[in-house]
Every structure is written in C-alpha cells, then in structure tokens.
Amino acid sequence: MAFSHDLLKDKAILVTGAGKGIGKACALLADACGANVIAVARTESDLVALKNESSERLSFWVGDVQDKALYEKIQALPLLHGLINNAGTNRVAPMQKQSDENIDDILSLNIRSAYKVAQAAITPMLKSQAPSIVHMSSQMGFVGSPGRTLYCLSKHAIEGLTKAMAVELAPNNIRVNSVAPTFIKTPMTEPMLQEPAFAEMVMNNIPLQRLGSVEDVANACIFLLSELSMTTTGSCLKVDGGWTAH
Image 1 (tube, helix red, strand yellow):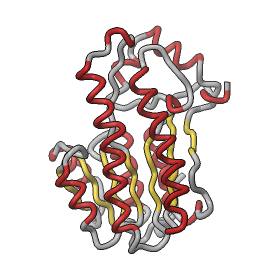
Image 2: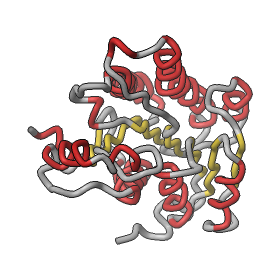
Image 3: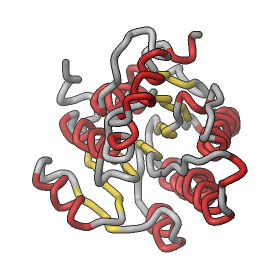
Image 4: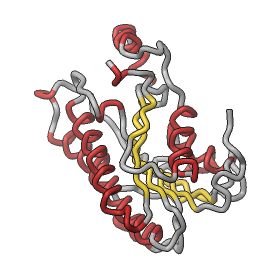
C-alpha cells in the first residue's frame, strides 16, 4: 500500500545513509510522494543507482555525516521541510571485548553525527512550513541485548535526544520523532540473520513472527514527515513486531 503522490509534494526532504537499505527505501518513498529529495551517502555508486530508480526531483550529495563540510552545506539550504537522520552502524561483541576503536566509532557515527546533522538542519527548517525531523532509532533504544552494549547505548541516546529536541523546538513548530525498527533484512543484518541460532532468537522475540521490511520502516518515517502526524512530537513509532511489548 502506497501513500499519495501528493503527500510530500514540493517538500525538501534530506535523507542520510541513503545509499542502501532503510535509507534508500526512505528516499525512494519520499520521492514517490512528491518530495524534492536530497539523498546523502558516502558511496557515489550507491547514490547513482538510487538516482536511476527515482524521479528527476531526487538529487544526491556524496558526503560523510561526520564531516563538518556536510553540516555547513545542510545549514546553508534555503529551506528544509524534513530530515530522516538515518546514518548509523553497529559493532557486536561482548562488552569486555569492545575495543576503543569500536567505542569511538559508535559514539561518533550513531550519536555525535546524528546530533550535528540535526543541529545543522534547524537553520533551514526555521524558514520552512511545518518541518519535521525523524531520527532512526531501534528497538534496542528500549531494551538491552547481549553483545549490543554499544548499539543500545547509542539508540537510548537517540531516544533522549528526540524527546529533548521535541520540547526545545516545539515553539518553532518543528516536530521531532523517532522510528524504532526491529531486525530488518538489510545488507548490515543479513549475515547475522543467516546464523540459525541468532535467527531463532530474533523470531522468538517477535510476537508477529515475521521480520520487518525496509518499506515498513520507510512508511513510518514518511508518516512522521507528513501532515498526517501534525500533533505528534517527542514520540517513537516502533516498527518492531511487538518485540518491546514483552
């Protein structure tokens, strides 16, 4: 089921981590809903492939969400109606084996860059009508899991950031929410889901007994960007099949 082609008509929407997986699905759906999408990723070939699947409205920036130059480019936009703050990564290991490099990578990409991208987006959003920010969270922003201390740390931080930004920016009519998926089949998760014991653990924790798709997550993000959710802010839309309802 698709949203209306006019749902985001003429809205300027920026999507980070748009080269693959969830980010790509979000960029394509926003484009299909009439938005003027700016897709951001580090790999140009991924963005070219995305462009080939989209309309002429979609443009892309090859850039790193940890780079000051990207923040300046976002801040200089004349208008910005929506941000899907999606770029992130994971480092799975027992806590005692997590290296300083892994700790720094997660803190830098999943927390600091998400904060800096959102911070930069505020300037053009102040000049836009009914803007909305969607942070990509996770069910791991609400629960704990072995081997995922760093990822849980980062996604709990995103949930706190979402609430604080929503309260602070409400007087400016900027809405801020998050989307929290369960395990979704993407290039990042597919190798893990091929392990029988891990796949069994995942399905045992999902009452609906099915994995989500990247399109499920994109649908949630587009809803939160659109005027269908005009009084929703400081909230999380969980796309977790019931995992966190246990």
